[in-house]
Image (cartoon, rainbow over all chains, first blue to last red; front, side):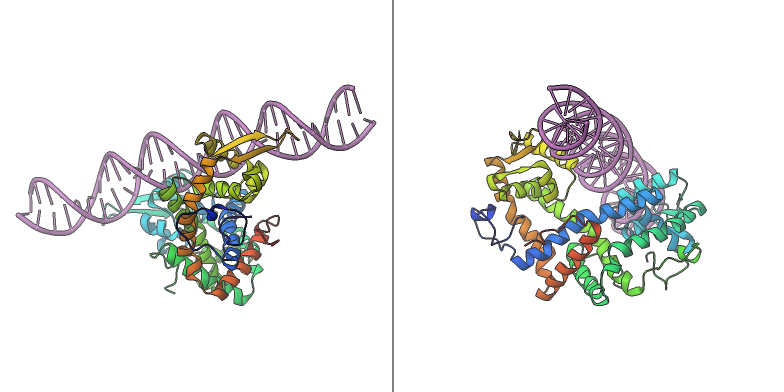
Length: 175
Length: 175
DNA sequence: AGCGATTGCTTGAAGCGTCAAGTAACGCGG
DNA sequence: CCGCGTTACTTGACGCTTCAAGCAATCGCT
C-alpha cells in the first residue's frame, strides 16, 4: 500500500543501485500513521479555527502567543519562533492581523531594528473568544484519546523527533 | 510560553465565559512537541525531496503509490486517498507530473467517469532514483531516533489520533 | 426510453507560504 | 566619525492548495 516495506511487491527497491536500509514492517507501521497525521491534523486544526473564528491556526498561535506575553507585546523574531514560523511568514500574517485591528506594530525605541507586535484590546477579545474552541478541538482529536502513559510517551517521542528535525527548537523543554 | 496551561500567567482563560477544560501541565507537555512537529516535519521532508529530486513530498507519494500498484496504474480517487490528498489537489499535481513526462492519464474504458493515472517508464526511473534518499531521511528524522518499544507506541498513538481526525482513514491498518 | 440525480474529475480564481532581494538601524574598526 | 558588515524586518513574485463551480459519463426511477 505504500513504499519502503521489504516484504511488499515489486516496488522501486528491486532495482536500486546500492542498498539503502528499507523500513521493516514494524518501522513502516509506525511511520505511516505519522505521515498521515502530518497532513491531516494541521488541516483539521485549521478547519476548526477557520470555521469557528475565521482565522487560521497559525494566526491563532500568533494572537495567543501575544496574549500571554508581558504587556501583550513581543518582538517579531520571538513571536515567529514561538509560533514555529519563519520571520517572513510572520511579517505577512501580522500585516493581515494589523489590518483587521487585532495587532499593532511599533518600532522599539531602544533599538530601531526591532519591531514589537502588540495585541490590541480587540485582539485580546478575539483570543479569549477563540481559545475554548481550540482547546476543545485539541482535546477531542488528541489528548482525550490517549491514556496518561501514552501522553508521557507522546511527549518523549515527539520531543526526540523534533530535536532531530530542528535542533534549535526545544519546544518548551526548558520547563 | 503558550496557551492553555492552567498554571500559567494571566492568559485568556481568566476571563472566559463558561469554563472549558484547559490542558494540564502533562497534557500540554505532550501536545506542544506534536504541534511543533506538524509544522516542521512536513517542511523537512519537503525540503529533502525538493533538494535531492526536485519534487515535493506529495509528488513523491503520488509517484511511489503508482509504482507499487499493479500495472503501475491507479484511479485518480484511489491515488488521492493513498497520498492523503484531495482529488482537486491530485488533479493539479498529476497535470504537472504529466507535463514532466512521469505520468500519463487515460480514461477508463469500462466507465468513462474514471480516469486512470499511469506511471511511465521515465516516471518509474524517477521513483527508483528518489526512494533511497527519502527512506534515509525518514530514518534520520524519525525511525532511527526511537527504540523498538517507542516505535510500537508511536504506531498505537498515531493510529488512535488519526482515527479521530479522519475516521475513514485506517492508514493501512488492514494489514 | 427519458430525464434528473449522482459520481468522478477538472478548472479558474483567490489566498497563503516561501524564497530572494531590498531597506533601515545599529555596531565596530580604523 | 565614517564606512562596512550585521541584524531585524519587509516586500514582491512565484508556486501550490483550496474552494466553488463546472462538465461529462453513468445510474436509477418511472
